[in-house]
Length: 312
Image 1 (cartoon, rainbow, N blue to C red):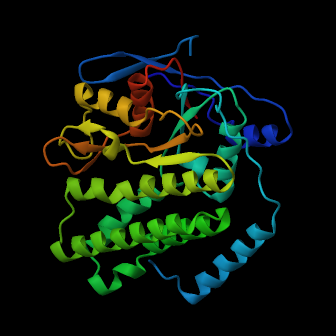
Image 2 (cartoon, one colour):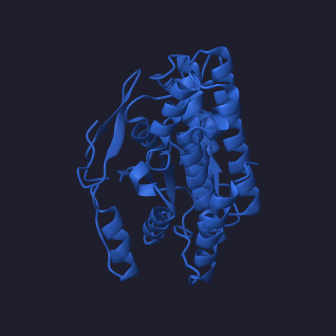
């Protein structure tokens, strides 16, 4: 898979957009489906309660955000009938609230495109989730809520919800996911076992939270947006946990149908979890291995028969 080397543009691109200039980026086109893999070639066609101290700091941040001028975003691609480009943003692009704002600026600066946006987990969340799993093996269940990486993950996502002013229902979803994450870690502690299947379930929380937060931010600023979990829109894989292979003959038509824009009403920016799939036999969450979010983006491009997939 050949990807653009121009990945350092992110912050500068958002600043440039705010100055009413434009930027360009290299893109990739995924076409040439093999029987078990997608290859990509460049183409010119292309309810957790925060402790008091953390609650106070979060409130200060939220108050500062509330005092800032409201961001006005232009909903992209409203003249189009269907998605015409896929954008993928990695963890460093969405590592905090400010970076998420910049990503929103970027995708809304191209009104001629109606994008499907594939996101990774925020910052180093995936690494911290794996660390939580390892620590749970040697931590008593009463100390699981106090695991340092779990506290960091909790603080990052809840404070980002506050700063970005996400919808109350989405904040509740994120809190429920954090609660489910804690329960999974307690189960690992009790069983004293961290299987590959449990690891895949563990790391899935990052993408599931980041996409919900980002889609809600778009909606709160006037951009129609819908969040999708890749396993629920038909990304079907083998049961090889940790490095699953996509089963394309099932996945491509299912994803095409799930991401088709409905007639009438505003065109929605679709926000999809990268990296994740659903095992064909067990129906458990799987991960696609290294570069999995890039593969998700190119897979969606292939399913929707698009000319352009931009990996940023």
